[in-house]
Structures are given as C-alpha cells and as structure tokens.
Length: 163
Image (cartoon, rainbow, N blue to C red; front, side):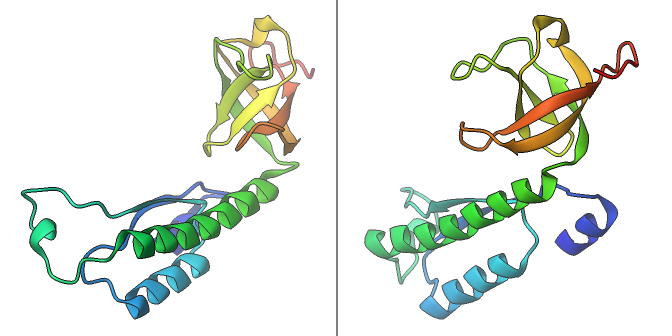
C-alpha cells in the first residue's frame, strides 16, 4: 500500500504508528519490524513503548517485555523515524507547493507559518497580507525550528502575481 501511494503521489507524506514491546514480541519479531520499517518509504513513524492497561487482554498476556527493553526498542524505531523525516524533508527542498498560511505567526521565530499539501510545516518571511491565505511557495531549506522548513512565496494565488 505504501509503494502504491508513493507511485501515485509525488512526495507523499505517509506516517505510521508503531507499538514497541507488545507482549510476546520476540527479539526476532522486533528485528523484522525494524528492518521492514527501514525499507518502507514512510515519511515518519510515531513510536511508543507498549504500556500495560488494567482490564485489557494484553495486560494478562504471558511474556511481558520489561520496560528497559521496550524503551530500547522504541529508541531504535525513533532513530529510523528521524532518518526518514530528514530524508523526506531533503526530497522536498527546491520543490514548489501550495501552502495554507495560518492567521498566527510562529511564536519562536515571528515568521508566518503554514502547511503544504503534503504536511510540511513551513516558515515564511512575509508580511501580514498573506495570513489566512493559500499561496504558491518554494521550499528553500531546513528551518532552525525542529521539523519545519523555510519557504518563500513565489506567486500570490489571490492576484496571480509573482512575488
């Protein structure tokens, strides 16, 4: 399914949630999962260690994984995810996108902020007239703020004029 989506959409953002250390997960099971995650063209993996919940079937399952091992496995998957999101961002540098620019500026940088169609958070150095609008941008580079990129407006979609 991931391959199919990537074949139909350029630079699709595809994320997945992974539970590390579910009861009965062997080291071999985990290694297979980690290897499959490395191979898949995902953009990000949201990982969390399994936590027991009273009253659930999983709480009473045999072969519970100890917390140290669960955290270790989650950390390995987080490393895989960090590489994937970095690679995804790199693939999007110098690409043109449409972005929805939000009403409020980014609190850390004071720049306009928005989200592209493929879920990239961007920061834009532009005036307030672009707030609450859709604009054509080019992604320039990584931003100094985690998981955001710097973009520049290249065409005002309201007026059709190049910036």
